[in-house]
Length: 99
Image 1 (cartoon, rainbow, N blue to C red):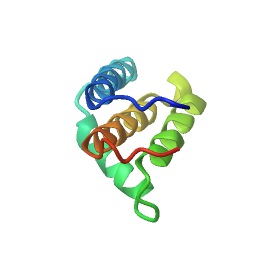
Image 2: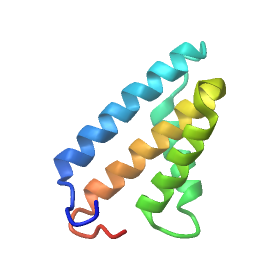
Image 3: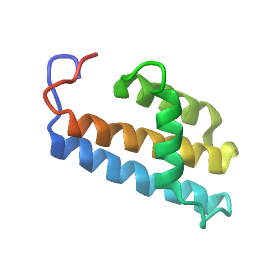
Image 4: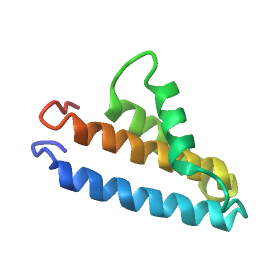
């Protein structure tokens, strides 16, 4: 996002794909019943509690998900879902993105 700002539609499309990947990871971990959107929202709200910066929260969650990989199964899925939620927050704030 160096010099360009993604559109609301792009952010929402990315969030949809992240939710799909999160569900796939949870399924591989044998955790199909998890309510990942609710869990992701809760985790995002914890990450953003001190600093209301969706992009920073998304980065932290994505970094953690990458570190855990598939070995972290349901936790990785939850963190991916948190990134998806952060992107939806960013989409709602279109025009106010910063890096």
